[in-house]
Image (tube, rainbow over all chains, first blue to last red):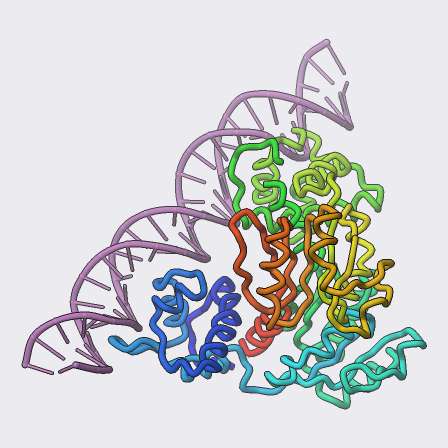
Length: 209
Length: 209
DNA sequence: AATTAATTATATCAATATGTACCAATTACG
DNA sequence: CGTAATTGGTACATATTGATATAATTAATT
């Protein structure tokens, strides 16, 4: 849980991963400190906005100095909850599920793939992302036994809601949803949608402007 | 190009694909008309907002009647530029590229997959989404010969910028970018980012709230 | 045909939310 | 010790959303 009380808007939250990415890169390049102005020019934001964003979580900067890259990165990492570990499962072992399972970055940041599930007999039993794909029939038992925090849904639209209901009833509290539909879940469950079709349509819109 | 002159904000544009999705669903269920209030309750928005959103493109509703589902859907389809066809290529034939290539929805909405490119000799020559994967060496020639509008980037971070520069120099005007980095492109090129890692981090943030 | 109820278009206003500019206070550093 | 740099907070500006009022239009009812 977070230690700060001030309510932070979703707009700011959505920028945090980007800060984290840029700060990680800076650290890899052995940059020790950075000013809001420099970071702004790097990220294409205004310095003012960066100071406001960061300051809504606490005073990580120092007047006359700027921000210490390492410290700020660690702070944001903690804000993003990446100082904890998460057990996750992927539901749907098609190409999308496959792609996600092989994202090295997930494991590196503490999101551990515990299982992959599918209904297709040809997929069940194969190895994806170092785990053996199990049949959906085993899902209930598995979630109960493994304290799964996050379910990554890579299933067709038709079954998305059904699967979402199933996993939330078993106690999963977070869903990363690649299925192109809006999920209806209990209020204590958080969903983050990755809607590729919507992104494509935004692109075709912009192409016509 | 659009026939309306009023400037529409990105916030509204990002909601258009969602309207399109819901209206398509309604049409499939043979619903002929819908009021802003009904649509609002369906989509989790306010009726006021829906009327304002739609009205920024023109008066598609009828007083005393509501909106005709079919007509409104077609109107939004046109606004999104989905009345034209687009030639696209996928760069990177890994699992992500594979997943996108098999999205039936893309073709159905007029985004035609013309080619898939990769550098891996094991991938080159295989068939993905009904096209034979070509080597990146053939990219320049292919883009010139096939009037490619959209490039879908599914390549590792390290080569993302290089590939983006390459395709924009060859005249590609739209990029759907799955590589986890911010691309630097000419101002007449539009980029839509799908950053899965960022989405995951937003989720872990929300889990800690 | 006239009346009534429902509903949107349009405009306007109020309330939030978000982004930017400014400046005092603080720090780094020569 | 003085100067330049930089943050953090405040105040201001802009953007977005939500609510409301009125006129116009449609559909249903009498």
